[in-house]
Length: 278
Ligand SMILES: Nc1ncnc2c1ncn2[C@@H]1O[C@H](COP(=O)(O)OP(=O)(O)O)[C@@H](O)[C@H]1O
Ligand SMILES: [Mg+2]
Image (cartoon, rainbow, N blue to C red):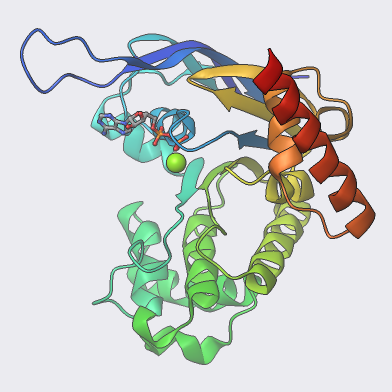
């Protein structure tokens, strides 16, 4: 496999606020790869370092060691100008559709902004925005309205359209459906899968929710306290996890099947009593 994105032994500590106090390492030697057109699901409990890894890939957090390679090029430490040009290839969708869109801009302006920032002629950018909205299943009359006029799911569709504007090869999706209700979640996930089939974009899909990640990912990486404890094909990781932490995540994630639910409750109960007597 020729990787689109390759992360090798990445380490990161945030700068300390006080003088001389040492900050804990948030990423402790993370290595992963994403192939073109693939989805790697990154799953782990809150505070395990998932967002930090996404931010490092986007150039928003500075690694203390290790490398990030995109399409064969070392992007671990880029200057602002190189970073801006890399925005053509790597985009992001954040969790919160209420704060990630500028409330003072119309949807048309929000979608045209990344194009104009990359030097597209404004008139040409305006003709692209209708096509972008259509790609995410939004009506064109949305163009002249403001983010506050839309639901969370619709706003997240706009955020996805904005991420697609420059036809990136990788999108970092950081908990993109966690703020949405269940049925909206399913529709937005289906949209992301559909977009991938049409465009061949790769996703780093970050979530604390194993049920979500299972639905969208080709491969899954499990993060625990700044380290990947397990990486593998989705089916292998979710049906026969090799790691105890992954097994517990699986037991904690909801399933629609009542028999499976009963099995899991029993498994959790046994795990608890075994832990108590250990
Ligand atoms: N900007 C920051 N400055 C200092 N510490 C941070 C910052 N962002 C996150 N952290 C810390 O890094 C750890 C990992 O956080 P994060 O990457 O957000 O985890 P996750 O996305 O898995 O919930 C947490 O302990 C968090 O408190
Ligand atoms: Mg996070």
